[in-house]
Length: 256
Image 1 (cartoon, rainbow, N blue to C red):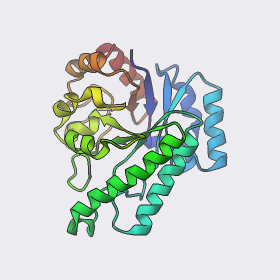
Image 2: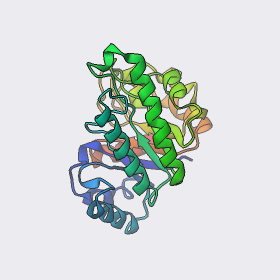
Image 3: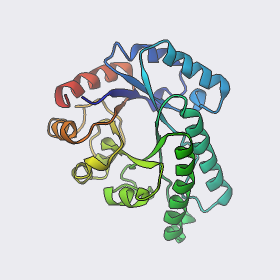
Image 4: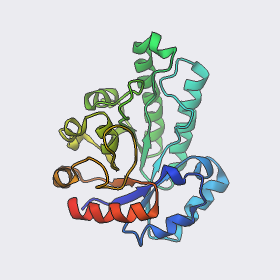
């Protein structure tokens, strides 16, 4: 059975007391959204995160910061700073986990004038990040994005091609994101290639992050496929502990 973790971007500005309820809610681990008061390059925040993990039975994975960052930016200082922050997160995360999810970049207004360059910059950034990941014994997993034209890596062959051959870099398959791009079926065709997984529901139009079963994704059909062909961590990304409990129960109904 896959290990089940929970993450919540909606709680990224909250103090971490809520994490102590995750085991009771049915989770094996916590995926740390490493932003705000959870930034791992902040010694005080790192100490607090480590204390939570040491005083629970929870394992950990990490989601690197992405707010205001762009690994495909044609603005060179922004591009370099994006690489620096993600690399710093990976270096600190190595004390907690061997899996860090990272977001791809996006095509800015200027980037739209030279889209081939944005793709090349994203690839260059991944090579640099992959070197840091290898150095620290971590796999940096690039995540597929929602169905918005400006985002890179919305489709399975895009993200497979983007990461192929880069040491230290893998793929996080986000089935909620895939649903907003009409790509759940195509992503499921490549389950064996994925190193990490995010689960949440929506109605196919926006990234709602609903509890499993509250949107339009056919989890009853998906669960057995994932169980047979994927053996890594599954992370429910949710908005509240109440929804976390319902998603955990749904996961055990459809995926176990």
